Length: 65
Image (cartoon, rainbow, N blue to C red; front, side):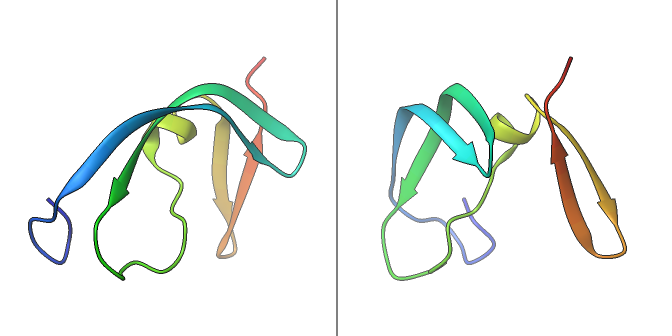
């Protein structure tokens, strides 16, 4: 389910997801049918594996040590 309702989706595992210089291996992902959202969204399967915080409206990502 999404904010827009129930949509068909496909589950897969990405070999790697890299944001800037921060790379995470083996990230679970979903491909949602349809035209929305048009942007790629970072999900908790990625965010739970890095340190992140919000500072004045900006999401800051750092490697976990």
